[in-house]
View (cartoon, rainbow, N blue to C red):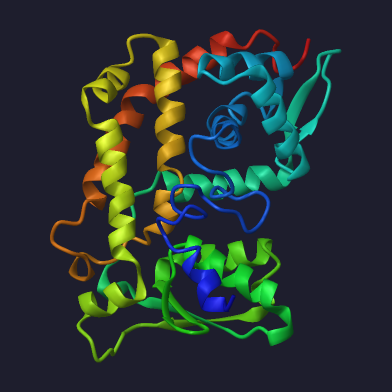
Amino acid sequence: MGDDDLLRQTRVGDEDLGRSGGSVHGLDDFDARPGSITSLLRTFVGLHVRKLGGWIAVADLVGLLQDAGLTTTGVRSAVSRAKAKGLLTAEARGGTSGYTLTDRAVGMLERGDATIFSRRRHAVEDGWCLLSYSVPEGMRPVRYRLRRLLAQLGCGTVADGLCIAPHRLADALESHLEDAGLREWVSVFDSAELRSGERLASACALWWDLEATAALHRDFLERFSGAGAAGGMEARSGRDAFVSQLRVVDAWRPIPYLDPGLPLEALPSDWPGDAAADLFAEIIARVSQPAAEYVACAVTVPISGE
C-alpha cells in the first residue's frame, strides 16, 4: 500500500478519522472515537476534573459516568487506557483511591479548550501558513503519522509534502507537531497572500475535503437540533444537564480540529458549519452551569481527601 492509499484512509469522514477520531499521539483530543467510553471519559475529565482540583475519587468517577449510561467495567477499562497514555495517574488521598491529572494532560486540555469552545473564522487578509515536510523513504511510518496528524488538525493538502492552513493555526500546529515528536521534519512558512491559478473557493475545494467536513456539521445538526435534543437543552434536572453536556461536547470535540474555519469566500453558499457552531454554543450555554453544580454535589469525597 502506498502513502496516498494510507492518507486516503485518514481523510475526514473515514472510520479512522472524522467520526472515530483516530490517534497519532497519546493525549490529544482526537484520540478516541466520539461516543466511545474512552472518549466520554476524556470529555468528562476535560469538563469537570480540572474544576475539582485535578483529582477525583475512583467511586465518584465511576458513579458519575454510570449516570451517563456507562458500565463500571467499561469505565475501569477506559481509565486503564487513560493511565497508559499519560492522561491520569493513580493517587490516593486521605486513604481514598483516586486519579490525578498529569501535567501533560492539563496542557493538552487547556489547548483543547481553545479549539473546542472558540469560534474560528479565518479572513483572507489574515494570511496563511504553509508546512513543507520531507521524510526519508525508509521512515514511511513516520511520514504516514505526520500526514495523518496534519489532516486531523485541519490542514489542506496542496501537493505531496506541502500542506496549508490559516495563519492563526500556526502556533497550535507547531505545538501539536512538537508533542508528537514530528516537529523536526516540518518547515513552517508564513504567507500573507495566496496567488493560485484557481479562484480561492476552487483551490480550497481541491486542498480540503469540504464535502466530508460539511457532512460532520450536518450530522451534528441532525443529532442535536430535534425535539429530543431540545428537551436535553432545557435540562429538566441537573443530571439531564450533565448528560447532555457530556454527550454534546463529546460529539462536537473532533469537528473544530477538522474544520479550520476557512474564509466564507472559500466555502459553498450552503455551508452548515456556522449553524452547527451556533447550536453547540446554545446548548453549552444552557447546560454548563447546572451540569457543573450537579457534579459538585455528586462528588462524595472532598478534593482534599479529608
